[in-house]
Amino acid sequence: MHMLTNLMAQQTIWRLPEESRILFATLIVLGAFVLILGLAPVLQTLPPRGRRAIIVTVTFLAGLFFAAEFFLPVDWTAIFPKDDPKRNFLTPAIQPAQNVLQIIGALALGLGTFGLVRLHLRNAVQRRAQWGYSIVLLVSFVVMATLSILNTLAEKEIVERGPVLKRAFSILFDYTLVQLDAAMFSLIAFYIFSAAYRAFRIRSIEASILMFTAMLVMIGVVPLGAFISYTLLGLPEAGAPEGANFLTQLEHSIGLPKIANWVLTQLNAPAQRAIEFGVGIGGLAMAIRLWLSLERGVT
Amino acid sequence: MDWLLEFLPRNLDRLSVWIGVLCTLAIYSLLYRENPVYRFFEHMYIGLAAGYSLGPLGVDILYRYWIEPIWIQGYWAWAFVVPYGMYLYFIFSERYGWISRIVIGTLIGASAGLFFQEFSSRYLPQLNSTLQKPLWVSDANPDMTYGMMINNILFVVILLSVLTYFTFSYEQRGPVKRVAIWGRWFLMIGLGAIFGNTVMARMALLIGRIYYLLNDWLMIRVGGG
Image 1 (tube, rainbow over the protein chains, first blue to last red):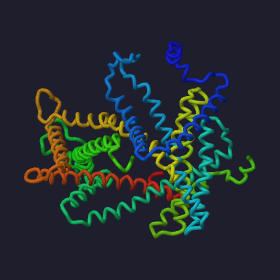
Image 2 (cartoon, one colour):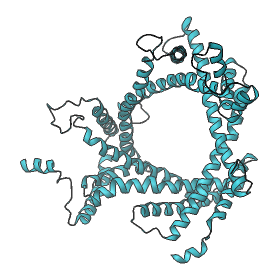
Image 3 (cartoon, chains in turn purple, green):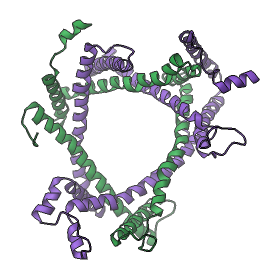
Image 4 (cartoon, each protein chain N blue to C red):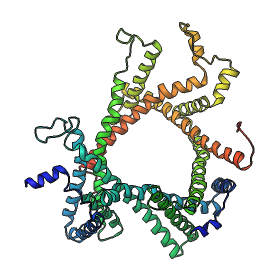
């Protein structure tokens, strides 16, 4: 027991020995796969109530870990001795826990990609309507995935970044994907005008306020606002001098760019903050419901 | 592999412009109507985007947080993380599908736990700064001007009236309803400002594309370029 405590204190129990590390690591990974995937048939024997209990417990423990790390006082020395007075005994485990979430998140990304590929592969194999586009998607996916993975490995100096990889990746990423990305998002500009037209057609006080503020901000933040205010109307561009009277101060602050800025910082900010408070309280309530598995759809 | 170089263009400058123009015009062809050229480039875009994400978001993370700690640093306990995460893929099985919910539960539980941290680090400082705004000029805040005072009062009035509008716990009537109506109007000012900003951001993207077509493709120098 004393030896085990010593080993844990030195952290040697968690690390494989330097010699034959790759062999041991490979064997342990294979063993982990066999063990955890082999557990699936065992889990399958559980009755529905037992299955739900497992999911609820795992969800609760995962949430409890992060909540406890945050809420527990740092002064916890009476029970768990620690080396740093600014953290409690759970803090050192936070970074590894977040890394675990990153890994699971990366696997979830693969899940989405797998779903996409499966759908289009089925379209192509069964020759459903417009299956040719599925072929286009699959070919561009396979080529780009290969180059992207090779490029990532080349960044880590695991494979060599040859001229073929460099040029082909550049053509597909810089000259195609980035351009398509920019074109696709700029397309929204046309639709946002159509949405604005529909929104502003509704005749009400709310729609009028919305339209007026939007127009003010749009004109105020572009050079047109400055041109109308300072060139056409001849309003002073600079701030009011020290000790100026109220009318002079007013004259120096009614340029469209200044009004737009005032609307954004003084009228928009509190309204946004109120929305954020609502979102925050709603999010907190939802977090508690999810953590305690009260949302039936999830568990 | 070098023989492949023969099939790839040597000078990428003009080719890149032509590819970019082709992509842009193909995507913009949707403005006329849905057509095969747009559909082709749309599917190519989805394929390229999905394929690209596997490198930096998949392989990079797995290498950094799983392969490196096990095979290079020798921390064997990490070996169990990926097999556990692989339970996610059971979602495609009718029989074993429920097992994927264990991993989904881990993600949801952790997100809920992390939200407590986010709430206190994001919303409580905002609440604190709102409550600390001085509402009148006094000796305690000698640097405050009357302009700042009016802005602070306006800030608190708008915040409280918008929060009143969002209070649905009881029926709003009388003075509360009047405050809520004002809150709705203030909310419209906020939404109008957000909408105006969004339009301008999208316009900036559109201007960028038009600039690219004129400047890089047609070589028409605009905007002092």
